[in-house]
Each structure stands twice: as structure tokens, then as C-alpha cells.
Length: 99
Image (tube, rainbow, N blue to C red; front, side):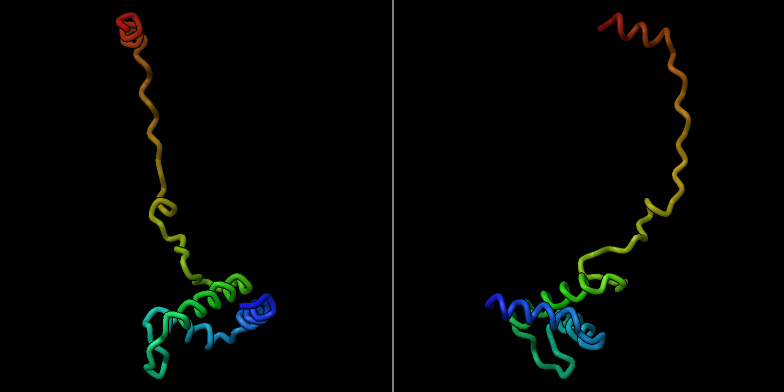
């Protein structure tokens, strides 16, 4: 694709209509167009590029391709740290002396 063609592609991809964006995502996921026609590998590649450009240009979109949501259990669970037990000075001294 020439620089001019690539620039036009990016401009068009940034301005996809929400229905076009949804259709592209569904076609990439299922390998078929809404009418049932099979998506070629070249079409799939171009649609993936368009989806990424669209999502980058429209950051308010919630579900971005390749990103996971923030519902990870480690982020939502309260982590309560237990206080460490006090160091037994005599045991520590014995370990140091033995080594």
C-alpha cells in the first residue's frame, strides 16, 4: 500500500460507523460476513488493522481488541497483611554463629 493509500486507509478506519466496526469485529471473530460469505485472509488482515486504528482513534470504547478488563481477583480482593512475628534474637544469633 502506498503512503497515500495508507493515509486514506487510516482516515477511513478512524471514521468507521459503529455498525461497521461491530460488523468487522464479528467478521474477524467468526470468519464470515453478516451475509454468511467467508472472509478471506487479506480481508481479515485489513479488518484487524482497521479495528485497531478505530479503537486507537476512539479511546472511549470500552471493549478494545486484545485488552482484558480490570476484573482480576487480585485487584478487587482486599489483601490483609499479617504482622510478622518478632525475630527471636537468640535463634538468630545461633544461626549466624553456626555459619
